[in-house]
Figure 1 (cartoon, rainbow over the protein chains, first blue to last red):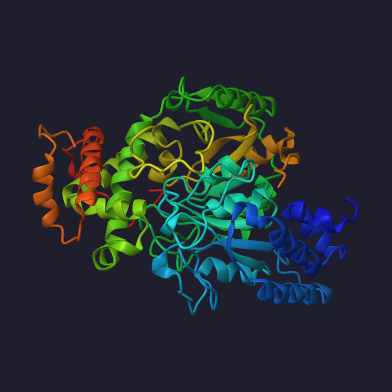
Figure 2: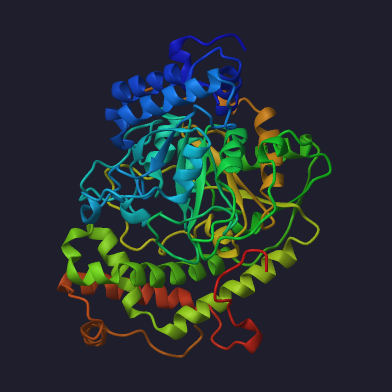
Length: 467
Length: 64
């Protein structure tokens, strides 16, 4: 590609920017300044940032440029502007969890993922809005404004990684870190039209990230393209002895995986999860996604998985109990400092018994085994990412989100499999549509291969929200 | 949990709430009662009897 004008820098993909940086055609400083200027100009419309670390970003960009000029390239994120959900601890930088309870908290040490990003040469632009402590509900009674959806600011961006989805879609960073306990990466990725991956449980360290549910929490990226997510995961994945759940998985080149052909790949379509319940736009988007995957050479067949409500309730019980255990002391000592909805969600776990919790854990094992059996002979699962459009900004959020519809993202939190959100067009209301691709545990490579093949065959990455 | 047990009434739930150690307002208890009863209903999907082999791992592994 030709050298981009300054205004075009913020819509480059990470892969494109990396190539231009390596060739010396742009600098990290120019890239960083372009993002800082855009944040300054438009973020007041969507409130995706809680803290912008402009001075630190400029120093990191200068360092990245100096290293590149001396022939040192730290990898695919060298000089790339990234932002972090505000539950990632950052040395010397406010880390609030979007809560009154941590409104003044400045950690002394970076989260392991932040350390890896910095070691990989990434430039950290700042900290992003989230639902309070990643609990999955947007409420107005928090110390910072809630993020809005850049496609239509009268709507929510989804969550809990709300600022991450909004900032990536609005070109206010090239990639963002989110977390996914019951869908908190995939939900905003879908509603904001970005790609985002919940990695296999255990692939990416959670050390230094505010927890919500020990046995479900995962950390992962959101970025505009599938390939950019792969490049971020190349830097993020790896064993961390300080995270009890961290796995010792074989190192994989995810960036290279995005170039793989999917001819002959076998994909199981989980139609029973959603048949008859999607909006007309989403149903059409799903059918089209399946058609495109088949066109690329994949074999897509309908497979019956366990009932979606089984995954939903299993996940909700475990998360409710573990979130209570994590926040119990503050729920007792300073309940008034929690948001109206968050407090009730964190209190509810006190009413569940140990036997109920253990039954849910046993149920999880059964669902994991049954899902694996259903997937036998298939490389991936394909399913919708969302039922329809996002919620309106002003509409009060339900206190308990296990009522209403089952979560389409929860199955892969329960099984621990990697699951990626891929944009598959736009509805008649202008909102992005999205589907999920889930792989076998630690087979993120196949997920990236199929997601990238789909993106190359469709025009959806060319459309951005206007702010 | 497949148990033939009626969900707690709001009065029964208040008694139980007093044992949790949480400082709860009347409004909290009303919301929590509604949430608990709803969760209990959904939990009917979870079997209550398990073979010993269903023992969950102490640390979850996605590839076990």
